[in-house]
Figure (cartoon, rainbow, N blue to C red):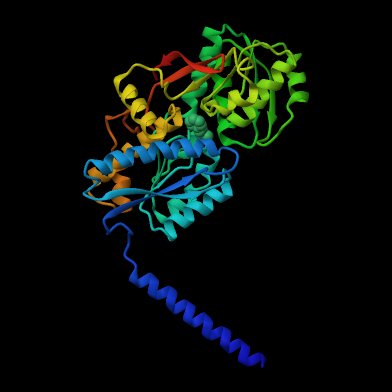
Length: 390
Ligand code: PHE
C-alpha cells in the first residue's frame, strides 16, 4: 500500500514538473508581445498607508490613460498590473515576486514608502527587472553602501534634501534655536530624515535637546509627549506618516504643547486633519514635492485633468505618480523596446523631462534633482508657504 502511494505521488510530481517545464519553454521572455504593455504596480492598497497607494496609482493611471488616448506607447496600450503590498515590507517582497514571475512585467513601479521599496530591491536585482519609485525618498533606495543599484530608480527628490529644507526652515523662518526629534522607529524613511535634519540644524547653530521614538500603529503618545513638553524646545520635528502624525498632533495640543510641529512629505494626507482636528494642525509645517495651489501652467493643467477624472484635489503623491508614469512612458519610447534591460538603460539616461513636479534629469545615483515646497496648515487647509530650489 505504502509503496503504491509513493509511486502515485511520484507520478503526480512528474506530471506537475513537466507541465511546469512546458510552461517555461512555451512562454516568451516578456508578456508584452501582444497589443498591451504591462507594467507592474507594487502598491500599498490596504494597511497602514493605503491612502498613499491609492493616490499614487490614481496619478499613474491618469498618465497611462492620456498616453493610451493619444495613440499609446510604441503603438500599444500601456496597462498597470497592480499587486497589494498591504503596507508591509515582507508583503512588498511577495508582491514584486508575483509581478515578475507570474505577470512577467518588464518593470515594476512602487512601492510608496521607503521601507517597502527597500524590501523589493534584492528581487529586482536578482531578476534584472528595473524598479522605479515615484515617492520613496530614502537615499539607500538608489545607493547601497556607496554603490549605485543598477536596477533602482526614482522620480522624486531624496531625504537629505528634504531634511535640510526643514532644518533651514526651523532655523530661519521659525527662528528655532532648539528642537526635539520624534521619529517612527519602524521606518527607514523616518530614521534617515532624523539624521539629515539634525546635521543641518546643528550646522545652523541649533541644538537638538531630545530624541524620542514611537512605532507604527502606536495609539498613545502622551507619556512621551509629556516628557517632550518639559524639554521646552522651540519646535518638534516629526518625520512620519499621516496616521501617527494626526494622533501625535492631537495629543500634543491636548497636553498644552503649542509650539510649531514640523515634518515632511509623509504628512500629506487629509487624514491628518481628520484625526487631529483643524485647530490642532494650526502652527504646523511640512516639506513636500509640490503644491496644487502653485500657478505654474503645468500644475494648473494637471490639477484640472485630475479633478475631472477623480473629483478631488491631487496631493503630492498623485502628482508624483503621474510624473513617474510619464518617466516610464518616456523611457519605453526612447528604448523603442519593452525589454527590461533596454528600459533600464533608457531610464538611466532620463534628461530634461518636463513633468508636473519639475524637470527630471537623473544624476549618477539615479536620483532627480528637484525643488521642494514648504506647506503650512491653516484651519485644516494646506497653504503654500515657500518654494525651495535645490
Ligand atoms: N517619501 C515617503 C517615503 O519615502 C513617501 C511619501 C512621498 C509620502 C510623498 C507622502 C508623499 O516613505
